Length: 497
Figure 1 (cartoon, rainbow, N blue to C red):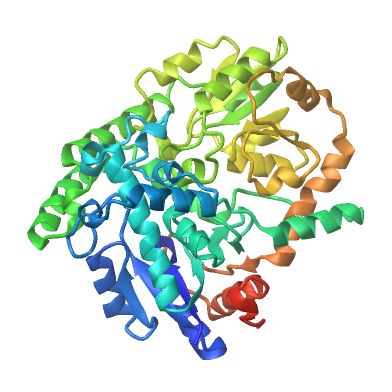
Figure 2 (figure 1 turned 120 degrees about the horizontal axis):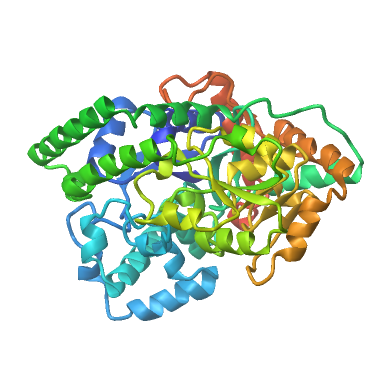
């Protein structure tokens, strides 16, 4: 019997058990769940005892293995040869795995140096990081071989490289950033040949679409509201007290996560979060209305460290340098509006916001401003891979994207740029107004391609995570099987629903 490996994720806590049962009943496919700790394993075993064929604690890049043995303690002397073999077969440097870790890869978070410091970040050296990568890939390869796993559905770079090393497809359950649509991405970058091909077909046929984004996508709006409330002083003090009690509880129960982030680092971060939230929602930051009558380009900042940048865009993650280069090459009279995200408060390097303000044509916007509203007023959007780039692209607004893997890169009014050497010509094209009518026609076609190829989440809400519509699970299962039909090893089709 064929098997699929699933990586557990908090946002998919209720989805995966139902999906595993559907795959067993409808497709005779076994499901194995891989979790990050013994506590997670016990949770799934107690709450979903009949969903998975087995629940396995997988080695994590930032932690010891489930039996308490450090991966570096039992790797043989051939680790370097194994590392070279992995990099050669997969085409992925092991440092890309390290980069995707908030702990080991924090040095790559150039605008996230105030992210809380963890014990693993301090005590892990380069040799240990390489050994852990090799150990993790070898673990996945062995699991795939012994359990007849024909696909890995997960979210981590480590699992993705492990799948590639074993020659099995990797899928990632992703949000489409429109409505409540979900899809199975072809890789950890969120790409989808299905969406891309549908978009190309619609463009070639000169099709049109009346779909439009009336508001930010559902999951994003819910989480932003939750973060905004956390900047209030009573909320901050409650969160700090809760974190102290949580640490004591974890210690008493012997949970491994008690040895994760330093408690004092978390408490300092919570205070910085409030400090930056107050600063960027007060008089130090401009309101969107202050830009009325001013022509400007919008650069939305991304959180660091975060998979949305470190994993989705390993080729380009230089936000501060990009802002400075755009500021340098903008025509006279055009301003650059920069807005931070709630999720990044408290993480930016000391003095970062002052450094932005020192760029004379840069305007730092109030963190409470909605990116969706800024996009509407901007002449264009410059981004790496942000949601604002998606919102602008589907609205027919010109976009300059440094990220290589964006779904919206397939639209003609989106310019993909990888060098900061000279941005004058891309910015000139963005501001010229050329191709405005064609951009207005093409933009909504991406929304149509998403609506026609992705799975409608219906009333599923990532913030509640406990209620999962049956039809949503069935559609997810069929979509997963369809995406794997022509890529399962040895020519074995999983089968369409």
